[in-house]
Length: 207
Image 1 (tube, one colour):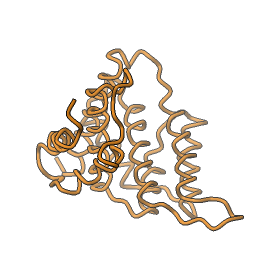
Image 2: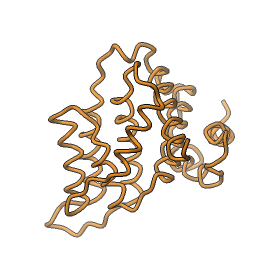
Image 3: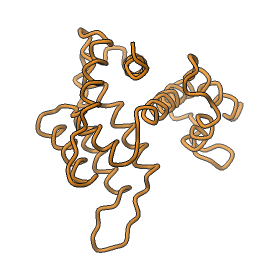
């Protein structure tokens, strides 16, 4: 199995685990993942900049974080409870390796959003086009995905649902702590996700 394929399998497994933690019968809930995709696309456009009547500079780091969030929803759309993770990963690898690109990032993003609105699908080829145009590769995606997924687990474990979770500690939001933790680790390590969780745990205020 190629390195990229194994990373996609890991991400699919992690997504199912996260969705199950939020709702153990998530398959039968009919959650509208496609809507989450196009709403994220609109939010991302604000970070990228689209207003011709004022000077705007793309916030590339924030755009990449939003793309990672979209990938969570895209994976959720693809997991059907019947197709194996390996088969799903092979489909994704094929589509991600053939990026669909318009003239610029904004237009490619609109292709991704349009598929989510009109066809209720995750257009992985257009997603790959966005990755190319923002300068992001599969390793960036994997690093960002595993980090954010682990943070989501951490939040759930520390009272996110009942409102007792503390989002800002030592003058930084949890996302900022996450970035620092991830940068200090080897993404190729077999226990990368576990190490990210431990890194967050070590920084989180003790009750």
